[in-house]
Image (cartoon, rainbow, N blue to C red; front, side):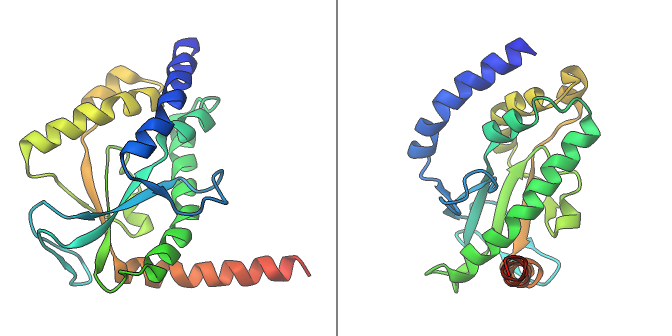
Length: 200
């Protein structure tokens, strides 16, 4: 536990530099505590993918790439000992952040060009219930590179690192813009109305 806390402290020092160099941006700088996504626009470089709603994602299509703010999530989970409870915690954090992401995409200056959102994660269990579609990474080199990059995160998040090392594989997580907006942008409006009513 002490070693994990020490590693997270070092990571916390490194994270601002990584954030600056990676050209990521926070969805809502005024809500750093609750928003777990950091994003940037990317050109897709993988194999063509057809999503369930008919959206086709081809090479060089514009996507919003999502990155979980892993060091903050791991710090928040440091006192959670159950793998199941950790999974629920991450699931809820992502679900709560998706309306803000939908608002960001819908209001973006290049919204008409954006095909959807994409992420790469080993922690993809349960993501389909949120509207994501899971697809494999065809490039062996890129899959190996992402595995190498994400294993430290996965091992720090697991209470059983040895077993986690053998079962984890990074996957693409896609969601079309239409699905994102239809599922979560309306919810954002409803949440704003609800918050207003609560304040009356």
